[in-house]
Length: 568
Image (tube, rainbow, N blue to C red; front, side):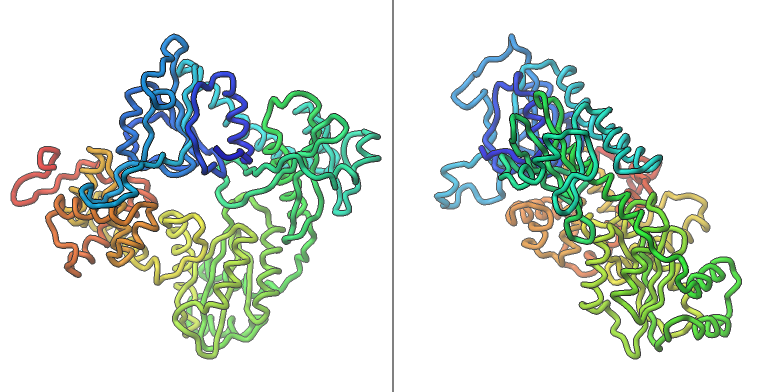
């Protein structure tokens, strides 16, 4: 078993240490712990989630489930029932599941099974006690985040925030500048005199920590021992350089997750400092005024757009592309929007930019532009979006000024749909080429609702896709998402396996099973097109409209007979 460096996982083990009777060997530690779930009919168990097993019979179902590295499984057993029944540790046989290969084929590596890589624990606690204990841990993180960020919003000064956190959490806290000099924090002469020496001391341990429900950004927290005390250091970074450090001193046994608390305090300070940076408000508002007048119906005609475009700060070339950018969080204030605007102006100095409500609009123009977003522009834009934790909807190039209103609205809709239906949270740039199907579905369904007066558009979905979705719901399988991924990846088993974290042979076996269920030839281009569009309709309904089509009163008649559970 590797040494655990993740702060939340380490704290989880410290909370349960007196009750753990068995732990599996594991190599992968999740970057975050996001939720607690009771093991039921899930076909896949994901990294960063805690799954609780109420009875030992649940162990026998693990072989049929996909368990991603970093998943945490905890079995609750009472003290008087703790008996190890076989030669395996704790009576658990947690081995690799079926990998989809032919069992009769010669493969020497199959002779020795390897244990699957996840964290499995047996604890001697009752199930309610275990659930309540773990729930308190996760609620603690949310409580810290709320308290610290509420202080940041209500009454922010560095000194006030540190004193308030000290009072709430009973630890001494400090803030060092980039030269490691104490500028705010507890009146502590020992630390004030030795802070430079302490900060330069080699850390005893380095933890990784994340905010609650954060997926991308990870911070390091250094634990340093000095003078009989433990100090936790977390850096504050702005524009990718170190600006200072938050320090928490532990003067009693570790009862809370101090690395994560230190990170939360650092992030609260960092976010408020970014929002406090002065950005000039007197930027040229000509483009912003055009968008506002357009939204209010004051600019409609081609000649009006042409006149307003000629008055923009930067000349508009014949080919135009509109980009709408929105922050991941709608709570960020106008000053941060203006910082993003300033960064865009530096990277794209010949482009017109504007801030409107919670969006930033960028107008790229070319003498002659390609239909796809240029790699250089995409790279610059991606870097900015990651820095500001934002996403962008990008239109196709257009030439007529009068089309700007349509293109602007399409970019906003593209961004809204993309954020809801995207497959990967890291995706930040949404283009029509990748999301055209969803835009067409959105427009078609609006017409459908207007024409027929209801949202039950399951009639538009291929009956075999509906049958497959019902089969998944009835049997707890994941055939429909796999089919969607398979079609998106142009029927490539290797690319599908990579995107779904499966073995290639597992994908092939499942596709074979899917083909037998739907009774259609997936090699037929016409069938592929119909199925891909149907999968997009299902995903649009579930992710964008939050409507479960299978829960409606929809009944599809096939061959004159209603389709139901008996036909699955």
